[in-house]
Image 1: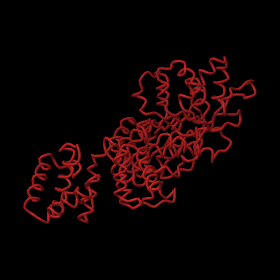
Image 2 (image 1 turned 180 degrees about the horizontal axis):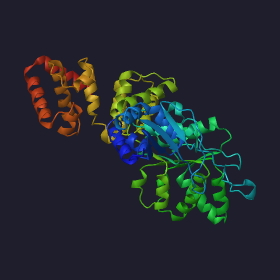
Image 3 (image 1 turned 45 degrees about the horizontal axis):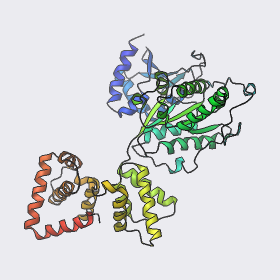
Image 4 (image 1 turned 120 degrees about the horizontal axis):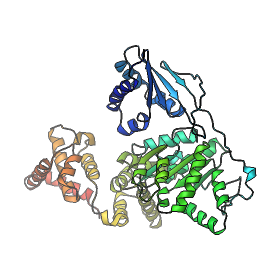
Length: 476
């Protein structure tokens, strides 16, 4: 008996949306299309076989519960996987695959052959430093998955990159566009994907090129009247990685030729990986037809790393270089420089160089002196997180309890002291300070500051606490 499959799936989506993160919902459930509901069997169409595998691996428990809740105890789920061929027609192939949890799969994707005959290209474009059929990938071996630290700030992008590396051109992530601010690891991740593909598929041609270099090569091709050879060269690449694609904006002819290359690679099942400092919707002066193609795959963002990720990155660099630093120095670097990874790694390198050249031991005092010179304008403003860390260490309290609602005397006192120093030593607003201390309002922060000031004038032991903490927090 046929019923309203769209309405049923809509009810499922409402439940799913309440149980997972919004970015995961948009990535894995928005693209799904309900096909039919017949005899308590709901059929949904997904973009690719990888998409189906990801749902089975990560969301099958949730899907089973939702289907039973909306459809009934006898409710079951079927997947329909429909891929397009070069002409835009749906492949009619139906293949039964091993499934789990009472699911079934229809219309498995098939590989699309490359329709270009290399023998027809008489004079392939030779990029300086590159050889035809033996292309240097231009990949930096230092940028691998092994030294790319995963955190909440990059988990989606890294997972998608890893999936692409395992099956280039065979996932729903084509193109894969990685975007984020300066120094957050876009280039590192792009190189890591390319390196992993070369290791798994040594016969594939992988090419990394910056957008500006691509544009300059195109200009040279115009001058030498070899545009066709330029295009043919890029069309023969199996995996094309373009860094900082936003620089194509405003370059009309460069966008036209890249559009041609993009279309050919995508239609022939080749993998495209792009990086940008902004998502497609925010790219200015970029052709709409190109932007629409950027949206075909997945746009994954890299955000500013949290404290734990920053500490893990520094520890990874330490172990990789066979260097040991005191924990307090590592934590101070991670707390003090929270803008981007590149700046933090630069500070780490400067600290090591200064210690080595001056033959000094790496101590917290040396780190403070170096940070003062390295960060310059922001050096005098330490972070609220660091203040809280120092206060909690001083009173031997876990940071989590500082942000809790407990009213224990020693916790309240530590919380008030951290608010006091945050107001005194940072430019943060009272509301921001309160938010860092468990969601307190600005009035609570003001009361805390007055309480600390009054106690420092009447309690000698409390005054000693403040003096010790101020000494630990001060940047010489």
